[in-house]
Each structure stands twice: as structure tokens, then as C-alpha cells.
Length: 77
Image (cartoon, rainbow, N blue to C red; front, side, top):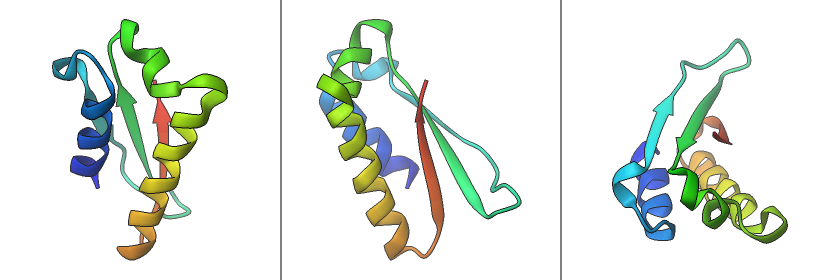
């Protein structure tokens, strides 16, 4: 899952070396939180107009999580 998020984010940004994904342990509800960190210049590219790209990233990650039978949440920091 972490590799999928990194691959998607690196394809969107101009500086793929600045992309970093950290993963929290599952909370009491069983939800694993993935934190996506990108460079300050690339933040707009990852969020998109009116958050459309961020929503699409979350949708793709949620679909992959359902296939793996896990619960996830993606935060863009």
C-alpha cells in the first residue's frame, strides 16, 4: 500500500525525491493512517483544483485497501 501511494505521488510532482510516506500503526478501529509528505512547491499538484486530485488519490488507495481487506486513511501533510 505504501509503495502504491509513493508511486502515484511521484508521478504527479516535479521533485519526486521529496515524496515521503509514513505509516501509523492501526488505531483502535483498525484504521491505518498513511501520511503523504511532498515538497512545498508540489503541494498544489497533489491537492489539485478544489481537491479533486487528492480525492482521486484517496479513492484509488481505498479501492486497493478493500482488495487487501484493510481500512486506511490518507492524510496529505
